[in-house]
View 1 (cartoon, one colour):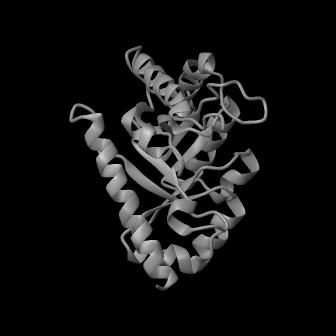
View 2 (spheres, rainbow, N blue to C red):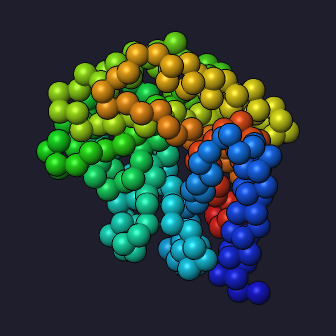
View 3 (cartoon, rainbow, N blue to C red):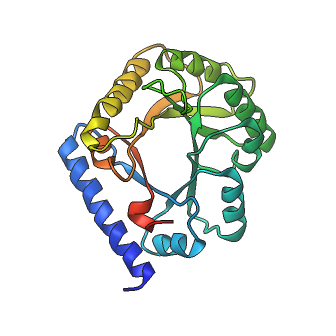
Amino acid sequence: MSEAQAIAERLQSIRARIDAAHERRGPRQSPAPRLIGVSKRQPLARLAAAYAAGLREFGENYAQELRDKLSDWQPGDVNWHYIGALQTNKLKYLVGKTALIHTVDRPELIAAIDQRAARAQVIQPFLIEVGLAGEQQKPGAPPERVAELLDACAQTEHGAARCVGLMVIPPAAVDPEQSRPWFRELRRLRDSLSAGPLRANVDLRELSMGMSADFEVAIEEGATLVRVGTAIFGER
């Protein structure tokens, strides 16, 4: 079996597991979750194989790597996601070039996205990364500060940065069930914030949660976006 065939088979298997988890979640929870293929440090040949098998959402962790991939390979119907640690000096590679930035966790990033998006005459969607577990080594806004970040988004100068949901990376776990409480907590936080006052430039429709080891549990708890890398592309 060729590498491209192996990627296509793995992708088909993951889609079947996503569909089954979505069915377990029940019809009241919609829409169906979208699969993001985490393609960091993967050669373009593997991305092209996944694309040929129908994948259209790709996620990158490193801004310069995303820049290079955009230069070397860019089918017109691909959506790029940025899921890595974020600094303001990296936004030049991301704003107006990505469908979604997943890792915003402080007000200055929101203001910088707004300024750069306004100059480019685009609207840039983003997610707030929430540090539910309070792990100091990981980025993410404390849950009690998320409302403050939503207020910052509502009050941007140009209205060119749009918060469309929340994202979480739970603590590392051996058993996927250990991640379930964190996914459930993110969903409850989103629901609580959505029930609060309406804010300009805010629509918390997305929950980005779940990776190769625990995406099915994440879907059962309400994920709309799951980030799967090695289970699609193989080891780097």
